[in-house]
Image 1 (spheres, rainbow, N blue to C red):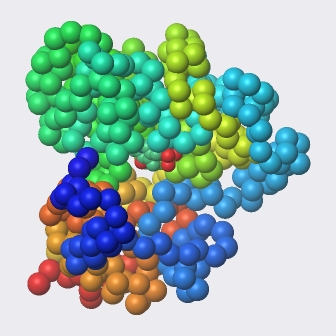
Image 2 (image 1 turned 90 degrees about the vertical axis):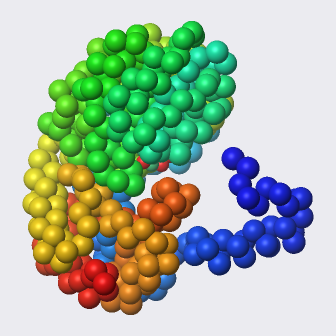
Length: 396
Ligand SMILES: *Cc1c(COP(=O)(O)O)cnc(C)c1O
């Protein structure tokens, strides 16, 4: 979207000025370099730190069985898939993973995409076009917002988790197809979409409901089947379920699960599915291994819940603001970008990595530390974070 920088004509001086402004506003971002495997004590910029920032909620990204499956997959299939799914890139490994994802979620079919971002682009632009409407929560993930734009449909957004507002937007869409798209677990807030009520509103307005459950799958519900299963809904209420493989499942890629007609429509019409190289088969093999662990090892979810309770009660004792979140995403909203940077830097000095999340990833005035917990954390590590937060971020 054209921002204030748009007034400059495109030249290096204008770009430099825009970067400078970013720096001045405490919005400049830089990347840290990680050595070695993912885990709760990675080596970052040459220092071993205690990290509360990854989306590897179940601790599967470096699991020996998952690594071994990837290695065997590379030996069996080679490294690249060498073509798109519709040409010659659709391996037995992809096929089996799709079957297993469908079985996990109790849906007839699943379709792999190379990333979650591409899955969202591909779904909305296959199902909607000019004259149609997509209704979205204000805090939907950027990929869903971009997907709405790319589709050419009219985008109608509603205040976060506000079912009455969503109903109003649905009712305003008079003609064409209507789809409501929402995150299952909101990525920067950790709260759940009110899916039961949204599903009722969609049924009433004859709209489709799509849930992006990137942060719920693996973590919530029986066998980690996510936000939809947790709220006891199924395909009748949520015909389009999108999930990613790079978060709780610890690998890479994404998928859509639904009925036969939906999946065949996506295979035929979804441009970000058709015109891209299939993800590496070895990655699919690794995901098959991590999916098995995610389904079976309930202790990972149980341990996460107990860490969560410990963290939240500690935060309450410190008088720091508690997020309305029962998921491993526990944002500490401190409002002002400068204060958030100060806290993040203070934690870093104590060997703790918690990223500062600033606009435009979150709305202005809602800058935060985004703390995420993993099943690999131990209680004493959570206590260490709490102690540091108490020293650095305690209310003034
Ligand atoms: C991470 C994420 C995506 C994008 O998935 P990638 O596989 O990383 O491209 C989409 N939606 C939500 C809600 C996410 O958190």
